[in-house]
Length: 571
Image (cartoon, rainbow, N blue to C red):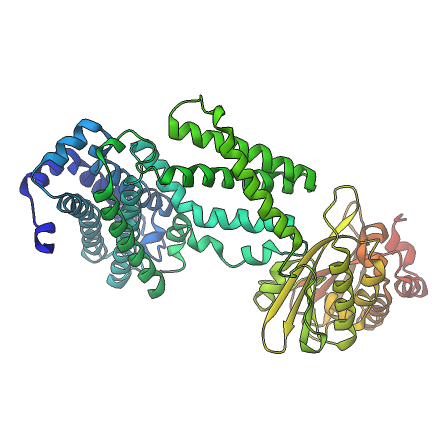
């Protein structure tokens, strides 16, 4: 039986060659324009001027154009190879041939695989010939070219297999294309929408924490575009191969189950229609809630977004299925959907898992994170820069852990919700436990209402020393020049270069930083008088704000008869 399924049918092959073979030619020509032609032009440029592009891999050569080829040609190929299924007469004709359905599917699929793989292999051989035959001075090796061939073939076969799989579930070629691209974006898109909407409904939930975990890796478009800097791992290659196999297995199974009457139908199987209808309603509901949650930040508007968007999505899906706009009499289906969503929302509101009020045991905490950025909690050791004022930081002293813990306990009790009518700040609290586990919560809080909780944290010596670059034990080189700058013109008003004066000024400024009240740290703009620029011995500079509360600095300037010069009419 397997040998019969995989047997070669010369008539089908000849028919495919006449009707679809041009796709293989176009495929080859596009890849030729993307790579070998570019190498030939680089050779011409090198021969004439001695200059050549500094390509580090084949992906560096017109990367965007390559991505376009990978995600368009295989989809078009999948549509054209199985286009006969989308018409009643052509479907009846093909299935009346003395060929089993499984054999017919395999013949079509294998022809598609050949049109995907052969042009890529030929382009790889041409790239090797251009690289070594023309002695191009570009850092490309045979290994680089083979890697490109393997990864590109894997990605194109994945796109082709996905297109074939989707084609089995619809009777319209246009929808086959649309659904295929939706399939590529769906995993990342639904994840973003679910996490964002959960953060609106569950107080303290940090969608940003989960969205910071390289979610773009599961978007095939982005992953291929990123191959220039990060090649496919063995695990990723195996996942793509597994998906290719699964797509084709499910596709042949659906192909054998599919009836000829499915041609021209939006969905080929009746069982898919409620899934599609309620799935579209659910996704549009999340999208509407996300939009109003981001723009209005009020639960009433979020609820409005849920209702209007789900209604729109539900009836649009009905119109696609029925291929008519006269579908509004089917409103009962939406009532069932709405009832299910209300029940789910009610369960979230009840918080049956205790998520909103959950805190770790104080004795189990090794260190606590306090700030406004989830990014720094996730990537604290991978910062590409050293901030002058480090608002987001890990605290290890017991008093600070208790202070942050008390703040979190109060937030868990009050469960503050975002509001557009009060001055709010993002508060991110994260715990690193002694067993290595992590826990994070994120809130929007009115800073004035919780000032008493901010105060002991922000005014602690540990927080101050982490917060201000100048107070850190390490991180900056000896200072050789201090410059005061006008707040409006940014012009220099005073420059200090005497080493003894620099040392004594820095000590005065450090005293002010250590004594700075939390109210000023939370609203530094009101006390700002200008910037103080510090030039280090290694040539780097950093800035600190000059604030009205810096009494030690003013006294130092006054004692050295420099206050008026530093002010330069600054009030």
